Image (cartoon, rainbow, N blue to C red; front, side):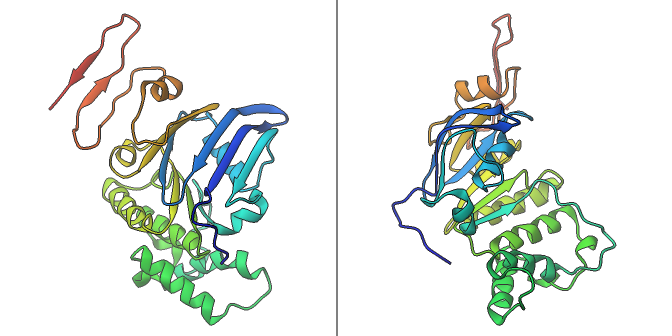
Length: 265
C-alpha cells in the first residue's frame, strides 16, 4: 500500500459545493483532516453528511471546489481509504461466512476474477484480530448480532489496509454495550489510522473523538473537540441535550422566551 508523506493532510476540501442535478446540498465546505485525527461529524438528517462522504470517495463529483485525499484526486486517493457504510443490505439466508465477507475488502486491491493469495488471507486474519472477531471467522454472517456484524464490516474496511477509515453511522443498530465496545475498538485503531466518523451518537462525541464538526449544508469545524454554540445553532436549531466529556451534565438551549437552564446530577 502506498504511503503518504507524514506532513501531508489526509483530506483537503476547499470551497466545495456538491449536490444532485445541480441542486446544492453542500455549500462552500472547507475541511482539513490531519494524520492521526479522529473526527466526529454531526448534523441533522439531510444536512449533507452522506453527500460529503460520497464526494470524498469519488462517487459524486463536486459542483465546484477542490477535494484531495492524500494529495490526490478522490478516484486515486480512495485506495488508501476503508469505508463502513450506514446500511449493509444482505439476505440473512445467504450462505456466506464471516471471513468471506472480510475478504471482500481485498477485491479493491486484486480485482474481480483473480485468485486470493496467502497475503490476502493474512490481511483478513489481521483485520479480524483488530476487531476481536477472529473466533467468528467461520460463522454465517446472517447469524450474527448487530454489534458483531458491525465488527465484521469494520474488519472488511480494515482488510484494505487503509490509512483513513470513514464510518457512516456505524452504531445505528447496535445495543449500548455493543456501541461502547465498537468505540473502544476505534480508539485503539486511531493509534495508527485517521478516522472520520459520521454519527448522531453523543456518547461518541463526548467521550471518544478528538475533534468535532457540524454540517448542515455548511460546515463548522475548528479542529477541537468543543461543541460550540455555532455548531448547535447550525445543526440543531431546537433545544438539545448534551453530555460533556468528563463532567456529565445537561444543557438545555435557550427557548424563544430566552430562558436557559442547566441541570447537574
